[in-house]
Image (cartoon, rainbow, N blue to C red; front, side, top):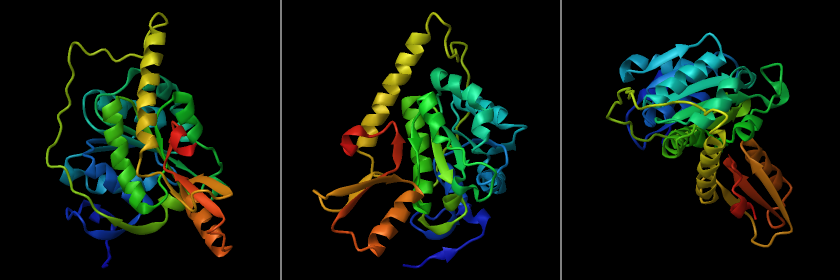
Length: 293
């Protein structure tokens, strides 16, 4: 099959089915465009910076609002407001940025969203390009929001689009976690179609965006738990989770993200395909318990 190499700005190519070489962060940006994103915010920091840079290059063509915010909590708040108004919104940051915006994250998870709302965190295992190995997946557990972890360039694009759809369907912010080895690697992705209809931000006098008072906090938490139960049902059947190996193998590796690729390589090099099975999870919170069992 033929693969063509394009510059970053060519994520705007509108040829469904075309295969192009993309960096991981470019693939995330492309997935956001295919999902119909309207508002993009963030704070620069490795390994996530190129997501906003890529979207900024095509902002005029697709009528996007793209902004670097003064910090990560402002970026998340701005995107949350856009999503509350019915727009699809994305915010991107490095791992430490999740610390900065945690206060708002722990309330917007309860207040919910109208438009698709995606928070992308760029982690850095082994501290290749930053000073810390902070694992932002813990924030998905703290906030009780869906978490997606792509393993390949194609999944980086496709999971971003899924995150928007899932967020809008459930009415809750979704987290997409990438890592340096994915964000700054390159691979081939097959393009999907671009949306033709643009959304308009709308607020109603009946809207009440709040995380609840102490008197009704249990209700908001109950609703969030119901959303997560629905997410778990979807994750148990997700195409991004799959098993490779014998049905009744003696040893199973359960892995996610780029760890899946390392596992595949190690099992192959050691010649253990007949003895070791690999369960790859792309949807890691809520854990697809039935699938794992």
